[in-house]
Length: 193
Image 1 (spheres, helix red, strand yellow):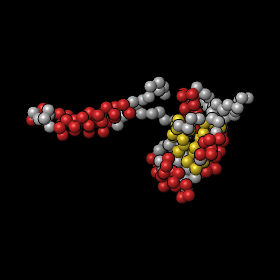
Image 2: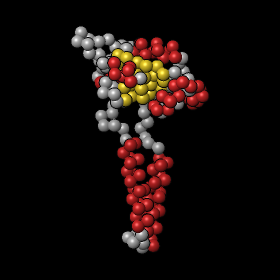
Image 3: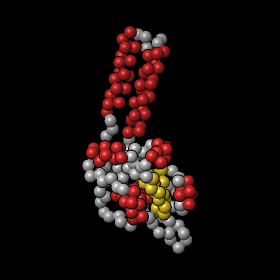
Image 4: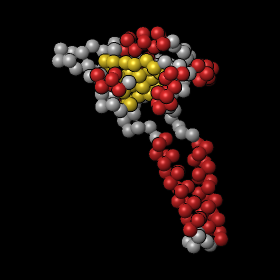
């Protein structure tokens, strides 16, 4: 894997076959998902490769690696946190720019178009990928919000909020958790679906 990433002069596409049991779950619970064979993953990667310009610069994907879902590659799947079939788009500076699970070719095309201003071959107007959610999961916010309200209410009611470090700590942790949940649930700045 290091060899592929180091020899790439552009972006690198990592395609993971995933394990069979998780692929079946993904297919069962996600509409319009087709699990691809290793050969089909290779064909997909080849269809996304970009050509170098006369100076040798590649303004897109110039290398790929398909990681089979067999027992021999289990450690690699664990390192990347892969269960079901997915792809990683690795930027030239070796940071992961995109992870798509389930694996969707249009997600890669959309990413390059919206984030990089580059239209790869095969790009069409209107990508067939689901939109990101516009809301966040309310349950954790409700739990931490309720904990904060109960803690503050109890401390104010009993008059022990100022003197009880445990109540202040619990209120602080709850408020901090609410702040973090709110921050990570926002769409990134400049996000334009």
